[in-house]
Image 1: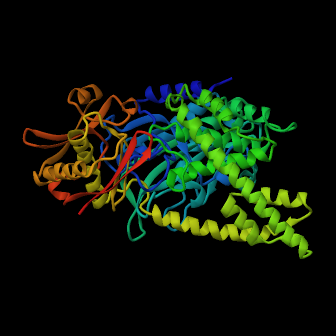
Image 2 (image 1 turned 180 degrees about the vertical axis):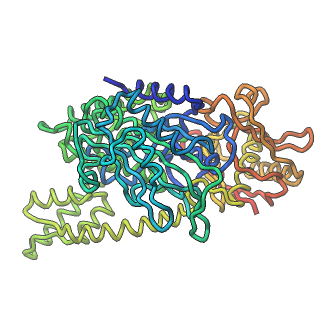
Image 3 (image 1 turned 90 degrees about the vertical axis):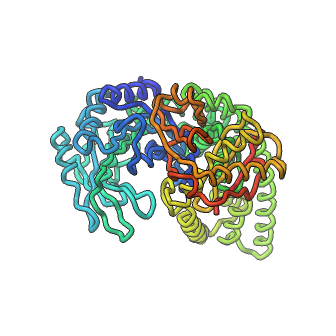
Length: 597
């Protein structure tokens, strides 16, 4: 049996031997990136370097990254899809490209992990009006020994990555699939029917960033061609151990077993509801375990977190789990993940407290929603009707969080049915509006490097130092989020700032702006950065070589921080700094929102 820890250790050692520097995992909550709510892949924290900034550790990197994705949430509960997962990756920042990347992937799978080439299938980009069919990648796979009938060409929706926003780096990808049983697909159509079902799963993806999409929609060859790869830890561990689903992985199996132990008799490990509870509670634990203090709310990360918890409660009821159970499952999840991610153990008290509060809130919603439904059914009974309308079912979903299956189940118990087709139509319209809203909110793509956001990034450094100068030297950054419109800065402080303190902070920052201080960076060891007094966030996550940005005028050093950029070159570019709001966001954490104009 291979464990998650063993797979991660072997993967990192393999790439370290091939010249890759190991980078630490980043927070699930992206730093200074308003374009996505969560870190969705190992490449996410590397965007500035994929765009051309020099990385302190060089051009070959490898690491393991914790990720959260919600685009596949409706698929969670099947054999392989998860909301939270760990991703192994290796990256080339303008160093090696297709042949070496693919060869290393193949070598690790077949030589290190001993996967027979006969159990191996791959996909390549089929080509379209923007870019040609990726015959080069296909030839590389055949040269390595993959049979031609195991190489499938798929369209852009399946085998293309990016750009993250409207423009930027993008290119074809090639995906690797592992058959835990001897399956011989005879055609691409047969392959598509088999993929991601039971013993047949995608385990690794090599993204080959070959092109740049321009503002006019053209695709031109990149000068710096990059490679971004990702291997799902849970999928790979389960497959290597001969399982036909990710829930057999050692970081998920004990959680699922606990869910089953408190559920109704007859619940199996294949039960979709039990798997959803397992996945969602683990995802909630990992989000709340972050140092940044995300708690359930109706906006941004807090909204997704609330959805995970409430969805797990609904599915728990469907397998006979009654009362408050989330903390009981969360304890097992913390045990399963705590060795790799100590922060979840450190923040376990907050996790249990927030789960309890959310369970209490939603239990009341379930109670009220049930009463609301019973009244609707009573009116239908009086009208001699037996079908609950689509709008009534959708109102229950929107107002009380009732999914269609719970509404349908409760109706069936009383001899009614539901207009499920109408509900699906309303849901589709709702999701389309939500999608368009999300696209509008996050249309900038990954990490906004606009002029406005760059100015605010530099201003954030000055605000950080101003708080230490004016309020208390122990203050440090807990989290931040920057859009082109404003900066948001979270810091450790348990009291409201006074009007006088706000004014002094603004004055300090603006005095540095008027001083026309230079902004520069140096690449140095972490030890040297600490010796210089450079400030940093979550130092345990840093590499041993870092970029340090300094704001100084002559011998006057105003700010020195470990950071990846981007920044202005001189503070005179910033304009006038102004604080527009302060608020409390969690116990001992305050938030400032500010602008430059």
